[in-house]
Image (cartoon, rainbow, N blue to C red; front, side, top):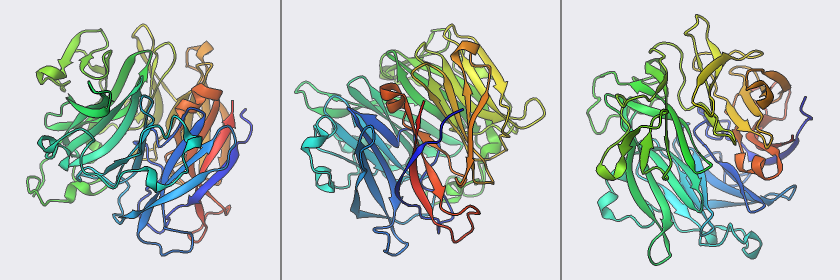
Length: 452
């Protein structure tokens, strides 16, 4: 069993809103560590006694292992849209020590800002304040007007460290009708770090890919995803249409199908299927497409309860772990889908929990010992559950190692970089200060630190 964690409070969660904006599965690295410091971001009011609206981005850091959080507010950007898609993401570039933020998107123009160089490399040399960061930007640093249309309709930004560089991924288009793109922030000939647009790595054809995650380990970039088929609806081609922005809108998760896999050994420039065959060279204008050879790991039909963007993790031997759920066997269950280092896929339904259709999504994390932790929220009750699958049992045993109440339904996020650093699992989630979590109870954004 896991010992109870230490809990640190970041700030109050805006529970007056209809949709949760702190703690969504596609916030891949909203909590992460670098060079002995930990960073995270969340939305809250300007101050605890301020008006409920608008919200603002709060950016926090602390020195590990147990330093006090330092937090400042970007008070120059009010966030006003009540939409769970419009989260904030963090990226840290090891090469120049910049901290990057992308935020408040659901089919919107790029919203972005970054710190000056060196802030993450020498954190104690910088007083923590918004003066370290650029103003609000609508272009990626280094890209010109020729890419303005590309970044005018963005959803689901995410960052991935690629050695000393930083990858930026984003979707264009809408639910059921979109593509995923990648750009890399790396040094140019003059040594200055800027973005280079690589291309559309995943192309939708009357559908769109929803990635579980992008993980870079051992020089290899891994991607798993599901497709969502597109269903025509009145006004779908109207540029002013907003029906697709509805959560569970016209093209909902009922149309999700298949779990797919591909990898890149050159930072996202070319992509191969699980058999190692080249299927896309972005420099040639190619993309991984739904009909690309050998990408389907599990053939799961539409209407099977398959979620999108749930979770992915990669262990030190290159094993790929995916968390999702389906009802292919007749009962809706959370499942662990696993690709062994020799390329064999297996799946196991999870005990102790019920992965309900359309329910809150969980998270995966791999410890320094290569054991797999599955962090699973309840969709209706304020309960958070941890399962452990051991490397020694080839990830086929699922031990219940921790379960507590007091955590409103939230999609937990994990600092995977810290796990590799000191084997402490920091979990970003929400916690209530009342046992019954009634409508008047305060809910905080918190970090749980489990010593493994």
